[in-house]
Image (tube, rainbow, N blue to C red; front, side):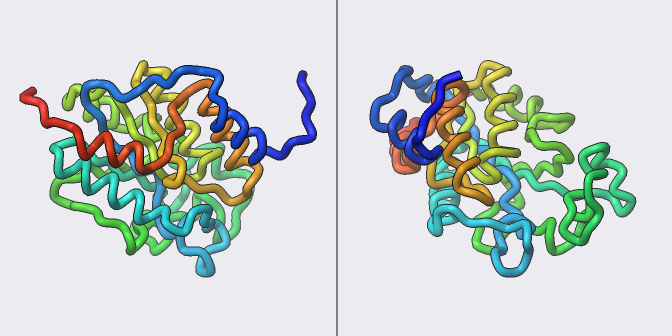
Length: 225
């Protein structure tokens, strides 16, 4: 194992400045998956589980989602929420049992609600109540992507080291070109955030400035599928 005296942020900044791999690039048709941008994780000061990395995260997420929607591309929002018993959280919900515990994000609760700053079109956008880390795990997401003939997935949300990374790995595993707009993902702590940006950029995804994604969507021409 290589050792280093650099921080996770420094390692990521180095690979960002001098990439060692070519990008996967955007393909023929993209979908946006916004992962768990719900109050439990975004309302800093109200919930202990919430966090913020880039203060403009929601602005970038809205810009990307609005542009994708305007081009007829699918916009998908996931959230986690569980039944009163919490049993649908499985073994994941057995390590703690406090008001802040994962399995205690109940369906219909304030912790399960999407952040008020988000622009969600409840008529057009796809809403997915997931139970596990990946947006793909036991959800209808694969069917939605297949129906729309998607080959590229843009992933935003949180946490970078948890549900975002899990969704990214599952996306690549299904052979989707996977794009992570850097300012659109967040984590509770700096080290796992940058360590996972570093790891995803080397292995699983194109980690790019949000403006790159906005530029791609701006230039995108709607297909006659």
